[in-house]
Amino acid sequence: MLKCNLRLLMAEHKIDDITSLMERCNVSRNAVNKLYKEVELETVKLETLIKICDGLSCKLSALIEYIPEK
Image (cartoon, rainbow, N blue to C red; front, side, top):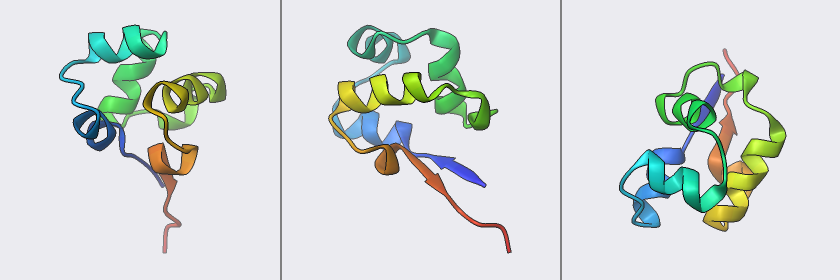
């Protein structure tokens, strides 16, 4: 199972809305929505994840976590 910490990272960086994040990271609304709502995370491109990590100055592991199912 994948878990996305985008909301937490946005709060830490005082980013109030998706539009601000899109502009800061130069990514599409569709990709941000998937991460924000934690739906279809496996379909988000690695390139998009890297742009968000660059924009938020974080590691990929801080943005996306893999939690093994038991």
